[in-house]
Image: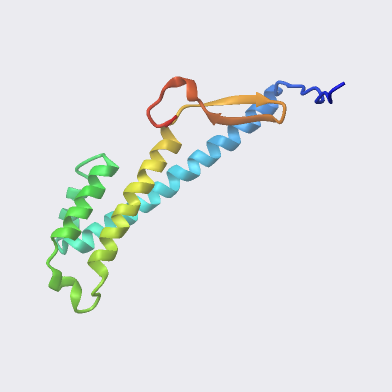
Length: 144
């Protein structure tokens, strides 16, 4: 007789267990949102510096859009259009480094959007319960 694998018993989580799993997930999403907002506030300061214009006017432009992506595009445009002689004397790699930073921020922004906006579900298996991506929703951030 062939070896029979042991039975795998799936036990649904109690309400308290499900609540604890949900709280852990929401705390993690909250940390992502906080870190992202912190980064974007630093980008606003960088925008002011790159614009080399009146701080109030620069921030008025920065906050004229509610879109993080549009703000990063404005910052990237300001960096790219700044004259090279502005950077070269003291910081010869600054312009290229900042443009590279903006590319990385945009890549990170896509991952942040996935983390914050992708639907999720509490799934239960023989190993226990956890929050996972809700693949059956066909949400575009869940690349299957």
